Length: 232
Image 1: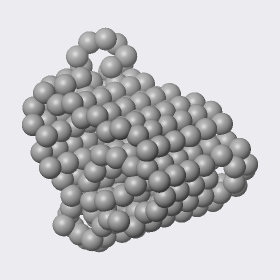
Image 2: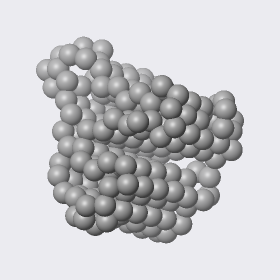
Image 3: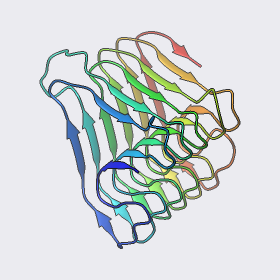
């Protein structure tokens, strides 16, 4: 069981897949919640799906809770689940996919922006293209901005392995050339990056993976801005 805003689907093989994805709210959070406990219960904003193959995927992704111009305490929240592969992702791709993935990813959360990985095997959270065990070249700038709050990126602490949390392209066992600038802004709070205590449950800003399982080239700057502390 999965939920997706974008084209594709599990094991999709439909050739070239182009299209922009835009998700906005004027009053309300944007939540990607994979915590139901089912295997492969993926929530995703982007084109793709578990095991997708075929042609290149291209399109920008914009997620924004600030469209009414007022401070509303609206958040963007990604939560991994207890089931194996129950990931939450804003980006193209998906676990086991094999495609070239292209397009800028911009996430603006009025207040807090949080990625909290789950307890299941490879139940990661990610803003960027790719996912667990993906193959292909990934490109596009990534901006994750909290104008009135903090940014928190936490790997999983219980249950299993591979519960990574990442703002960047790639993921565990990802293979390919990855490029694009990564910009993270916490304009009214801390930026908190905390790896989990299980195997391969890293947390990071940048492309590739923090478990040293990915291959290929990495290009692009990493720009971090925080009004509070950078906590690693």
